[in-house]
Image 1 (cartoon, rainbow, N blue to C red):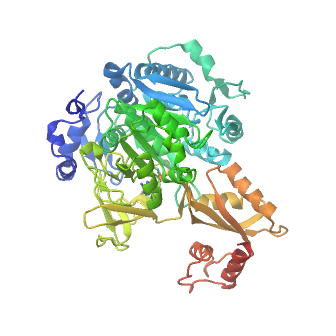
Image 2: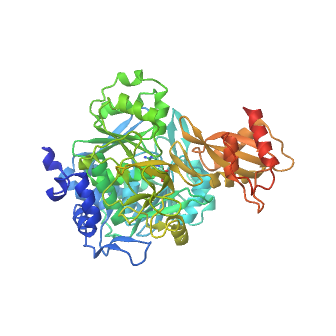
Image 3: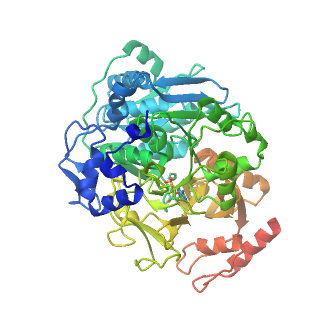
Length: 636
Ligand code: WT7
């Protein structure tokens, strides 16, 4: 097949690549989106491209009817029924391949089971599964019925699960017994069992059996039993409207309570589809390996919804990169002839330390595009990736985006002929993305002057809101600057319009690319019987990007010890999840506070990272800072 036949758009948009497409998307937005939306199948045409009547609750393609699961499966059946949609492999090398028509059958069977259990349009179901095939299958099945999924990353633990189930008032939890990590069993169902004791909305726990017999509790139903009875039958797809919710995904903010970011069938569907083509340039013979977990937005958008709507083949790997050996990923790239590879800076840094010999034995010549996501990539990691994985010749798309943006916002766009790369830059905004960098006062910065990245007009993939909390949506994203979306990242823009994202501007940490709020960790620490108060901050870490450091004040009757330090660490991991990684816990008798009693995290950070303190005029008690300094000195 010639390249021309494979191009996703007609000539009007293709001949002049990136620049012209971008210009059209801004100057002729309505016409542009009408054109783009034709690529997907609609049950019923929309009335308005963008409905602004209830801004900032913008609604895209309102009045139309479209279903993302239909566009990923039914639409691809005709032309790609026998093409592999998903390859799956685990640590041990067990693997399966599902064609589009097999995936369609599995999704329909799953949907029928869900339907028989009473799941219908608008119901919420929490999915707590590792990267097994039933994860995308259950997502697509729920979406087919118009039900709303909320995936909780399997690295989260009991408390995180309880909070998310209750906020979403989920009717069902879908889980399995366990996953394997470095040949060790990681328990999942036991965590669900504990959680559902405190989640009254849950009617059923749908348990997917793996290679062991699950211990069934009273709300549990076994998927395999029901599926056997059901068999493979077609389930009518729900003709959802463009503005019906597709999923809720909880993410950390500046308070202790995670935000339920929700996305809709229409706008999110189109955005993930288009950005997959623009950034990863996926064509029919590509095999896309995204190493993310589907429990995060990266997996939602670029393992499941984007690539499958684009009719691509994806590889899902249930395991870690360095087990059984540090060449596990390169083995997979070679075995499956992977062409596009997408990973995180943390993963790259963790593999760098094993040296290049692990790569040399593998034929990586099928690769044509590399990607990075989740945190800024440091120059050493970039160079290593470029040289050793990219053979000093492949483009690296450094994609900036967020759970909230639904899909990639700033990156190079090989699919639009834009391979322009600059060291450390993320690149130029994608079509439709009107990005800028503002000063604190809300005016554009000068070139190379640090400020806050902002998005000045709505885009189809944007979040629809914060579940159950419209005020928080307005306050968090639309209030810092009048009428523009505020992502909460620092950035600079250079004279050529390239964006460089510098990191979070709020109290949110990025530990191994995973987003976690300092307040969430503090709340868990305080719930431990020994802890009176705590202040958590992030410090730079050479591999993970950042780790959490806590200054902790103990309750009377408790004395600092390394044993207690270990106990607190374990407690946070057990309660919130293993994604929290500590760079230190320091015991102090008091925290630096303002006269009005607010904890001054800024000072805790300055002391811990050995920086100058800055303005201390509001500090109530200077001895608190001196004590913290002393504790840290003694420790190191
Ligand atoms: C935050 C969003 C986007 C999917 C994974 C994370 C940071 C993300 C980059 C990048 C620099 C990046 C930002 C952003 N971030 N990608 N390429 N360069 N920073 O999604 O958990 O919602 O986190 O991740 O700080 O705000 P998320």
